[in-house]
Length: 328
Image (cartoon, rainbow, N blue to C red; front, side, top):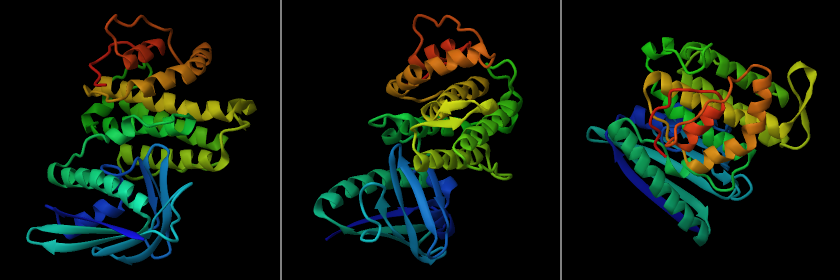
């Protein structure tokens, strides 16, 4: 078997470095789309590293502030019983040396994991140095889009917009006439509870944390519930009417992508999204938007400017106005 080792010196304290490698809110800024972890020996963890690629296992060793060892397995692939990742933190001058050792890999697995750890350690160093690793290009354009990977990909688009909202932005009007940013946030949290309930999941709304943290935690729980259930068959929709499970999951992508646009409009931000992701949401969510429009949930379609981006065109189809520049 082969071992991969990676080391970086971060300009942060040991406690902050430990938070960066163990706390979901920090992990989402450099390594994951969603993350949950029961931070104790024997506790389980589950991280969506990029859309459709999920690592899970248990905490094997834990020395708070110094070391963590995880049984590292990919769902549908690498067995966490044979592969371990240990991260050791050592004070170095005014910073912290982070040493990662990934053991129990075949040669082929070691090659792909070495590439992955190089990629994510670059993002970790950027985050620790500048405070912002930026959006992960590996998450921005996932392969093999389906209902669940699209939900994860559009969540990754929404997250940096939510992080960019300032307190004063919450009273700003969004393109949705009935919502300022605060009301739109309440609507989004309620939607996650509702879509989760369709899969039989009891989704709790966290009382504390930033809006990005609350949305990401709830969205991770909802998507995990549908991954466990599957997207075949029907679920109990609003009013007791059966709804195809695929439609229920696709609602997540519509909500995440359009509300990323709405929040960005209200706060003067830009949205970074791959055209392929927008095209998937337009193709698979178009009929859902039309049906919801008939019930008053969307305004009438408006004409998009000739030079509009794919996301601006989707927003116009959903009845939104006033586009801003969008980086593709």
